[in-house]
Image (tube, rainbow, N blue to C red; front, side):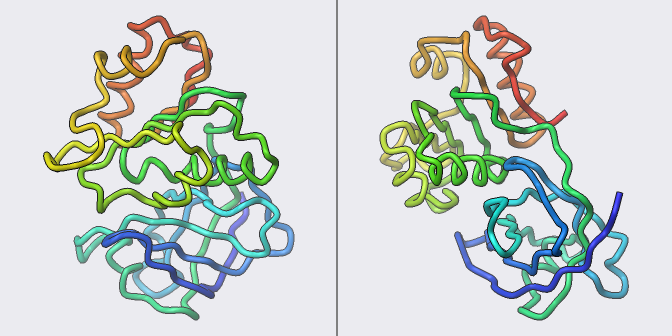
Length: 222
């Protein structure tokens, strides 16, 4: 697998703890919507601290983009990313990943697990192929919803927010559990795309299978 050095050209705040990093795009680099790369900060002490991040731009954009949740652990990579400015460099690998679009269905994301779906939805929207795709997006509070206005524009009523730790929310207050899925989904014989923390993903996949979803129609990162 090849590695590439890219330079940060733009940093865009998205929420209180999420930023988008736009970087230079190597001439021969390519990826499919939903894929990720192994990324590290190209500076002493951090070059070997590699973590997977998903591309959130379109494959034909002139730049590469990563939308990253930034944590407060000083020893963590995302803490360092929160301190950098333009001109810094990342090292990235070739694209990889199991999440790819296989047709209309229901996308279920927990928090930063939305990132593989950003490029997929942007790609579909640009092609006028959003269709009847549905996005169920779970976050702790309304302030945590990444790219809220863009998803509303792309998906309309098919963008459904679930808030777990803000009782006064205007959205559904609870979790994506069996009762919620039975209420929101009428057909379990369709594609399901799932991404989020490991426990979230496992619970959703197990519940979907219990409700009759075909294992072959479940798309997630193994």
